[in-house]
Image 1 (cartoon, rainbow, N blue to C red):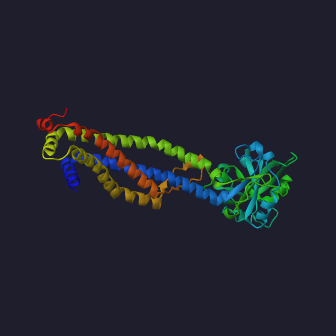
Image 2: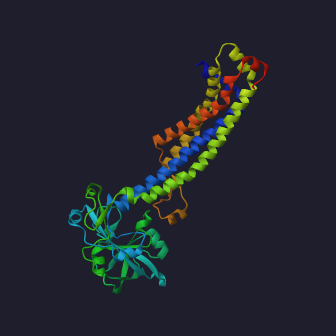
Length: 390
């Protein structure tokens, strides 16, 4: 207790020098926790939206299907296995058939993907029910980004051309029955959704699928027939790798902030030991052991971290609460990234992340405070009283 009291009084006596160190260190606390919260929120937000609207509890892909290789679509289709078919019949899974096509919006030519899905499916939350129409019109569902890129709106007709399984070209006019608002670009950008029975009729691929979306409780079959199961770990890998890369890039900013704060504390400790050499000698002469004197100076340095934590709480907690409730606005350019970004990003501040950040900074501050103080252990009291620190 005596060491803590002396350390506090010495920091208070240092005045402005102490507060400058505390302010810089508190910024390190706040910025590190805030930015880590943004990255974790990005991961959680994108993952949640994609699971709700696109991935369900997982997907069964045809063994030849590669979403990044359009040429694979010609061969990546087959009838689902009996086990998957049973899930489809029980409404626990939804078939998706994918084919390439060309559309002609406003006299231009544009390649698109035709995706057929059951309008009555309830596996994912995308508004496929809009495709359930009674007339003979071919209903089409597009996303908001696709609508902006092509100039298509609800009620518009669009001519499309495709090839069936025998390679024969055909064309038809379809009607945009709904423009869905979605943040998931992988079900929006360059895609036209239609009833799967109509797409089967157009391509002569009755009963076949490119991939099958299943509910979470029905995702335990494993690989079956020509279809391979892809879990969330695989389907969300690109998001997690992107967030991981962002975090690695952010480490450089953390290191710069930490370096500035640690350098300030180190210089302060060196100056403190130099200016207080007679005080150190007096304490040793009065019977305080060298280890206790070293501990006193180390505690003084470590208390910078405690004071910085208290200061960070005064302005950091309101900042964290505000951004957690109202989010962080994102520019419109984020739509082109291909990820499910909404107009606002809501950070997630995990308790483990906050505690780990505080512990790392406190340990670093303590080590940096100890290094210049360790010189006291070799100091003779007579030299200190004379003003010598050699």
